[in-house]
Image (tube, rainbow, N blue to C red):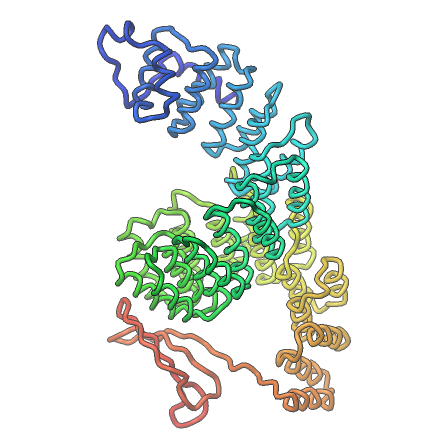
Length: 620
């Protein structure tokens, strides 16, 4: 940072703000630092003019006092003037007032607001003394930038210092706990909140409700809510969200009926909950009955359909949304593009891309990331590559999309190269999804297990992340590729997934390629214990027995499947058929003599038809 500041010191001699032209000679007589600072402190519409007047005073050789530097720094922070702020930092160093607590805290805030967290932290470390405001500024900065673990790590250091945390410290830490679902950490914070005597604050209580809700502890959120002496609309919406987001719809509706004056957020929380855990058609009905649905209301429905693999229905809702003249924002397009990616319908994808450009959202990072993902999933690797390179801003979601895209399109080498490149990108750190994509790349390219294990250990040891069942399942699949699943059971136990049916299913599937009957029987027993009768278990066991010539056990597995009336799910495949007149995306069902259903979607001259595939005269 110091080198950057020294290089800008020559600019301070001609300190200028490009939007201001100094006035005539009476300027020096009428303008003083007192009036400039007064205008800056008011933070009103005259701030821009005041900054220009400050530039003229600097050129006149007049410098403000410490109080003036604080307000100038805040003005640069709030006005988005990064280059001027860096010049101001250089002047502060030259003036020798960087040891002033208020000035240094303002500089930390300046770098935080410009998302220069490394510079802000370095400034923080170089301070001789810090106040609780300084600590809170940096902690909240990490929270707002999504670096929740660094925020909590800093909070722990605050508690070890001789400075007491205040309500702002706790709210930032509680927010980080909620995002990371660290309920034990959150409960310890709750205890400290009570100990510090700030639990009576409505704002703190709302944060506690939000934290418990995001951690999946709706009952504890309800305890905090019921103990509140005063409740505002945020309190009601927070407890409503705590139950909606955890699938407790009955309790959510009971709370909704108790809200004195529900607002749009209240309705949207219910719509989102029903769309995620209830009947989607009920969510649509609730949407149509609410007083003033906004884009978030419609987005929740679209996302609900996309998350359930009903992309065609999502497109239909999007069409109705546009017909209702509701504003479509970046989150609308992000969701609908994900639905189209699931359909692998490039015609719809290109049409939606055109719509995005028309709305002027093509350079938005959220939409751009969804477009990259869509083109990759439609097999258009070059289009995805060009779009990724063109995007003016790339966030973690963008990088995850491109790493995943290359892995799933057979170029795992490029995926791993991009992962290494992403690690060196300023302000970005891989998350659980990143490592899932990296391990998936190892699986797709059949890299050795030890290579995948290096990435798993990197995730745990270097980035302090706990593996998800999906990480464990991919590691098991790689073991299956190598034909040895003997160490899989120990890994499942060591990672704490002994009671997770997903990983045992993955192990059973890996036994199909490795041929380990004993491990397969163990995995099958665990799946049955955890998830009950499952057709996958019977089919896999039958196939594994048959591959070893154990026909009696294979027949027994099939017989048990029939006796328990467990049906094998019908397989589907989606294909695009293009002729001279129209583009058809067709869904085929195996071994069926009749059409499942018929669906037409009139967007971009694209039609989705359900066609039959199986036995009979009309077999395709």
